[in-house]
Image (cartoon, rainbow, N blue to C red; front, side, top):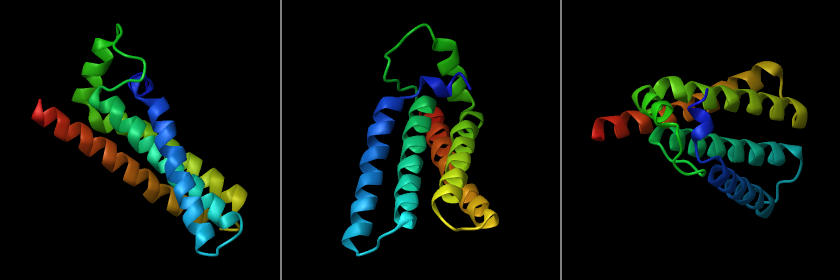
Amino acid sequence: MASVTLGPWRPAAVVGALGGGVSLVLHLVGGHFGLGILSSALSVAALLFFCVGGAGSVLGYSSRGAGRDHRIRRWARSHPWQVAAVPAGMMFLTDVVVRQVLTSQGLFGSVWTGLWHGAVVAAVVGVAGTFSRSRA
């Protein structure tokens, strides 16, 4: 958990907000209105946020700069899939809550969508960490 806190979460929030905003605008331009497009845009924003923040934490990037956390960074680089579990779990929870609050989608559908969105985040973060470790 500590290794994930070292990620570039401020830049990840910017990327997530931009991605969610673009998704919302594209839905509105397409003529779709309602809470479904808002939940979709929030889901895209969360997906980008957790992918960028999680991948940055596994790659050793931080918005706070280098500090006394070299051991945590070294552990994160050598265990990318354990680090990936945290943002993936957070993506799952965020997606289920957003879909349950903003849409009429059933619980099973929300859980299923949240699971595969969490799997995407886990794959992006884990693969980024694995390839960076093999390159170093």
